[in-house]
Image (cartoon, rainbow, N blue to C red; front, side, top):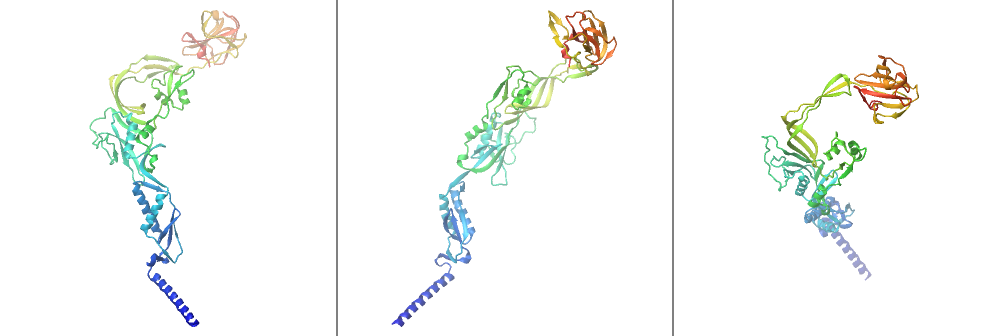
Amino acid sequence: MRSITKYSRKLKLTYVKSALAVCGLMVIGFPWFGGISRADEGYYAVVLNGERLGAVSNPDDAEDAYLEARLMIENENDASVYIDYDLQVYEEDKLYGKKISQDKLADKMYDVLKEASVEVKEKAYMVNIEGFMVTLSSKEEVVELLNAAKSKYDQNNEFTTILTDGTGSRFSYISYEFVKLGTEVKNNPVVLASEYGTEGGSADTGTAAQDGILDIDFAEDVEIIETYVSASQINTLDEAVELVTKEKEESKIYEVVQGDTLSGIAAQYDLTLDELLAMNPDFSEEGYIQIGDRLNVTVPEPELSVVLDKQETYEEAYSLPVEYVYNDSQYTTYSNVISEGSQGYREVVADVTYVNGVETGRELLSETIIVEASPKIVEVGTITPPTFIKPISGGYLTSGYGPRWGSVHRGVDWSCSTGTSVMASSGGTVVQAGWYGSYGYCITISHGNGIQTRYAHLSKILVSYGDYVKQGDVIGRSGNTGNSTGPHLHFEVIVNGTRVNPFTYLN
């Protein structure tokens, strides 16, 4: 019995081994058996967002499946979709393993991605105004925005906005231009606003330009970029128009106080004088400002500043530049009007530039003289006039030029001790030296060109008639002679026989 039992067991063991060998041969000979593949074809595990989805023979199969899954999601949303995902594909060391088809893998990935953080982004158009940005949903809205920004200054809608696509990138850069209706549209525009629209004609080049807007543009750099953003980032058209056209700050008014100048006020508000005058057309550089005058020092501006070039025809009075006749025997302080001249009248055609309605430039294109103007003619001297110094050192002023004791004092008085040195105020020739009535001892010096100086109430005279003296030479000593109330020097400046205020000439 024992021998039979041992034989039976041996027989059973032989059968099991044979069966296993046959199964192994079937797997090797038939790779499709049971969905199991040989390892020499590659075995790559696919893990998406931490979830193992299966294995593929090639990493590219996983990438293709992912793109297919994404495409299914984007087609559902009809937009660009941004997904938070983590795709890992790595090789595993297996002799045999079951693999998944690309279609089934794409379906599994679709299910995982739908559960992931998915952000749907829509195609939109960002308008960048030197760092200030608004985003609109269509090119048509961009056109309406730009048209709205210029409409305040193009009230008759003579110009419309044309957008033209750039090339060379996934996100298009779009250029804009304002085109006058009725002119030829070039470069195949992408958008032409229908409410202003024209299919374009040919520009009328047979006649001269008429008065009106020649050109319109924005002062700022404007970029239009095609992009993808979330719906919450897109402005409505009304919002965008409000943001772009609203004024950024309130205007400020400055009230003139004592000591103000136009240039000083301009510097205080970081403006040039030309900018300040442009804000205040009632004032001019040559004019005067008075205490209490009110000046605009800031002007509210929108995000987009509109620049207009306009042709304007108008009539105006005009004057010719002053003509000067030079006299080499007179000082530069001398002037004599030979002819007053007269204004003329003319018709002018000008190219005028405005920024937000404020004139910033004017170019004369042509003029038609209606009444001829004549220039003002002025004779002026060419000789540099002499300088004058105080004729004594020290002393103190006791009487100025002007009304005194019921009359007019025609000079200035400095109180000083008798014998103080008196100097020539300027170089010249002595034309009087000696006793001179109520002046007492007195010296008069001629400096040429009708100018004289007089030194009165002297105690001693140190020059004679006809002497030439230089500025600063001692010509006498102060005293108390003539009609005098005490030791002092009386000093006069005489111009063409008229005594004038000496302080106008003294340095």
